[in-house]
Image (cartoon, rainbow, N blue to C red; front, side, top):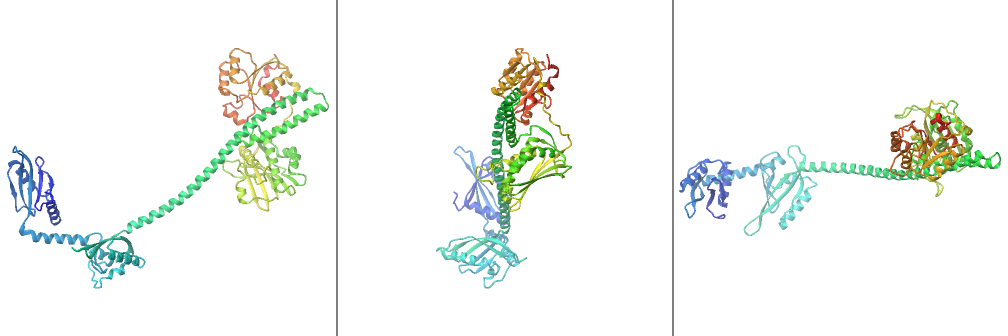
Length: 629
């Protein structure tokens, strides 16, 4: 049925819609719509009316001389029982209209081909282009028809750079019959600009398979080429951004790695400093007791020497705390003149006997609000670095003066400590890395690379900033800018240990370090405190108190093993309504106090290693009404 020469179709019995048509009818339907631009079975209701009539009457019917160009015969298809199965339609062109229809059909195709929005062409096997549609002519020559007797005028429209490839490609195709699409630029006849085109073509062969001529098309792809160029530019931009982002990511990863390494070292330094402070505290208490109990003489002087060395060891511990980035423990107003008078000899020893060391300080220099020991450590550290830079034989100058600077996020007034040397100096690459932990230019085993980062941490935690200037062969200037202070310097006078009360007050000492508990107990027993109970951690202490143990004062560490944090301990203590004062003693620094939620000023805090005089002073401040029972 599909290949039958008779054009026929089948309509459904219920809906009357077309459900099948053979190739012959498909051809007639297409040609009819090309000629009339009307759909055969949608735009002619007369045809569907005859289909319905055939369905109803179950008899053949015809439709001749209808507005369409075809005549129809409709036949009912019935089953063995006489029921309607479908309606078959046979279509026939009107014989007297056939020639006219073919002429109209040819004109339609010709018009479509001429107006087709592609450059269409035909050429001989020798490459002579003997026909181009209007679209192609208008693009290259701004005219529908171009008279070209040589059949080679098209060559002048090609871009000179593309013509060799086009000729070579087309010549190969003509030789072997293999189609090879290619790109080329074609000149626009209106503005003379070249537009990119994509050409495709195919050979037309006769019955014997011999190529008679070629037909092809060229599509203007300039907009696509422009889009490609924009895309390439965007890709290049994205690659540039990607490269920049990758560099930023690498820098961020490097910074993260450094930060993680720094955090690890900070934790290690803080932990070591804590343990060292506990050891120094135990030694300090025992050395103080020994010093007080010995009569004047050689042994008493030896005990005092031990006390002095413990203070120097405490300086090392404070350096570890400073490197760990923790806040200074004891911030006070410091007079730079007095400070340099105290540590002048220490600085001179640090730079060495063969180095010329000069200290210059303005007469009107202001005070600074810092941890005094941290500042001392920082200046000693800078002095040692300067000594190494001058190889122990140059000139080092420490100058101190006021500086007025307008910096966002900082105070207006600073006191600047400048350590200047005329040593080897640093290259820009080295200068860029001086704040990196563990970076050092010193020989192996002669430098840790921790000194400058430690100084920087101290200065920034004090509200200041640090600046380093250096050039190879000229020297280095390290400047510490610390905020000015209007506070008065508090003179620290040693407490009279004889004023320590002899009392019957009951004390509870809480510390996980047995050595600390024993040292405190011994020291307090030595000055009259006989009722002393100790506990390993906060949980044990709470159990003692809940069982009704009488306590007048608690001396407690802050961080201890167990599930009860110190803040919870204080809450439970308050819930008992016992009104027991608490003095905290810790080997950590101020930030640990804050982390554990202790209210500033409510409970006094002593930072290990502290002296007996420090402890007695805190006891007198905390429980003056309970000194004598």
